[in-house]
Image (cartoon, rainbow, N blue to C red; front, side, top):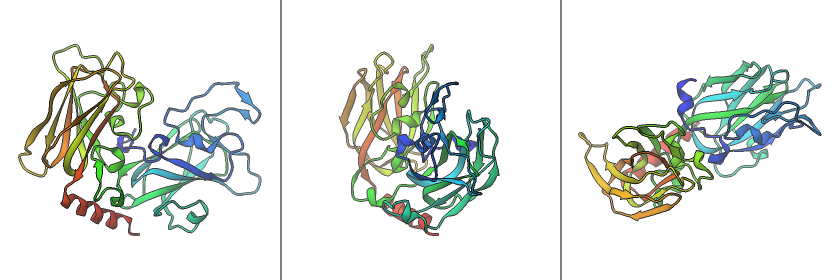
Length: 335
């Protein structure tokens, strides 16, 4: 896998992505393109439309045209790379595909997006059956909100992944109390001690974790150390409320945790204990009021190991951070 595959998937359903429209979905539903799990397949499972596939599959074209799917990204951002996965499509995959992207404010309909300023980010490229194809985006310096997948002429694609950097719209951040640790606001886990079972970025996802796999879980430690994750906040700010959620982690929650804040704008970066080592309960949403100085990143330490479903750090953006977010958004959304 290339380097961009570690970046958030801006299109995945669990982050709010949606397949708004498709030219055809005769054999398999367009919504499958954005499923968060790896494509599955059970042979000889025939329904009224033929073999069932965990992907998007269109009818055989006889008119010389090609098929398209229109996707609204769950999170706006700079697209760095695209994955087109033809898993399990062996005799019915499209020989070529391309991807376009556009930026559109508000909540446009498919019809309103027809005349948008579409930019080709993956040119028409050859595909193989049952293969993960990774393509670097041709345009990485702009924010996009939608992508359009074209396959030539027809066939099946299991998954579309759109990896990139989240760029939050400042309209929904400035002047408000916000979650400084939310992925959708631009936060990321930049380092961690262990991600054996699942990615620490999962802690920063929206909504409640439905099962253990939707949080961060480490391997069992057999030494005297402990696990940790370093979160770069969406922007510098003051934290007012911390939420540590161990929902679904009944026998593998950490025994304790601690939070440390840092201000990386200064050298050396000063640090503050935001919450000292504190006991955790399994399968529980823990909430703690606090008042931090302005911080740019937070380290979550868990003792000795285990899993965290969600981490929320609610607070206020620093005044200069609000200005920086607005300036960045304006610069990256211009054609």
